[in-house]
Length: 265
Image 1: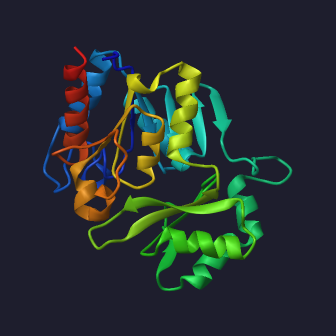
Image 2 (image 1 turned 90 degrees about the horizontal axis):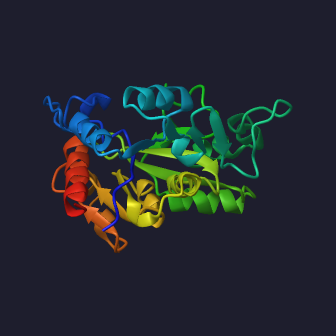
């Protein structure tokens, strides 16, 4: 097998446990396995690239704390590699004359359309929806496919609502309204091309349907166990290159990393 060169990893409900802590598991118990997963990568010269729905300022600091120089923010809206930022938001692009992508989308009326149509079932994910450059971040319990059909019906052909997974134990999910071509999978594929990575040289870990788009680029994708606990239908028609960890959160990422490293010796 090819040497492992990169790990693309989601943060919330994947590497991070309860309270978005890397030092706790999903139940809130102290665990160092998430940290040890990153340590194992660094010791084996495996690049760690965060792929998160968080905004740029957050992911930049998270990547720095984990010893990485590249990261993907706002669910694949852009790839940052050191000082370079590549936007994957066509046909919307940030511009001094028209504002951020987020502002352009808001002026088009799509966010309010969704809030009005799904009133009582969808709301802004306060306060994390503030100061975003691209996506409009919501929380609720709707089918993203219904939202996409609504957007298409009202002429918002270049937008989609992506489901970034469960955010609590009551079934509430986080959703990003983004340009149609934005996805974590597309961002992973772009970073791989820049680095010259082959699919068999990289793995990805996540917990949501959106994270699973990375399986289209990475040679192997690992679902952490808590993903199945919160969304049992995820196991339906999984791509052949998807493996399901026995452990959840950081322990699941650790399981993925050490398993892949051992199998490639």
